[in-house]
Length: 247
Image 1 (cartoon, rainbow, N blue to C red):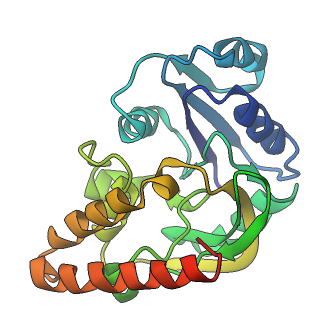
Image 2: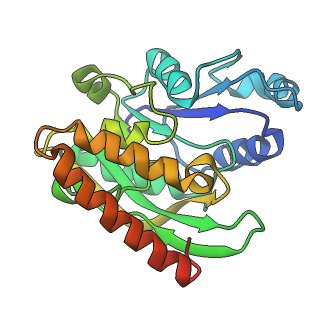
């Protein structure tokens, strides 16, 4: 199996990070896997937690950063895996075989391996599972991949560059929009991660849509007009989900 780099960026979430690391340690996968944690100088006991995990982590640091995409870019520079996956500090793997299921799909050496993730309210109520297969055209309309846990070939970052640190929330979508249409991708409908809907991208929805529009309009085939149409459609879809309790 290929080597995997798991990357976690965190800030003042020691409880969530402990659960995340526990779920990684419980994985049954028999593969070369490194875990890199980048903490934004937390003051809630995160450093003490990481010190206790030091012998099980490939690398960790606790230093001020300029945001999550700066942390991720630093991690990419250190990652030595054939594939990388970004996991939120408050995310955790849905089952001990989750990573095994993803890595088994790398046999054909795809560029991306995606799955579905389970989303929960901050109170722990299950909301939905979400995440679709890669589709270059549909990605230009809106984010259809559930990015946490997605396996991405490390060499893609050498081809198209790192994350744009000017984004606060949608830098992953901006990066994915830069991928070529002939990308080789595979997908599983298995649930890979469990995620809380309390993160920044879920609590600042206006900024999410603003940054989505910004990322889209930078693409030559989209421009301002088409991006504006997609902006309106995405707001309408969000309003519908809100009405039925899925957002």
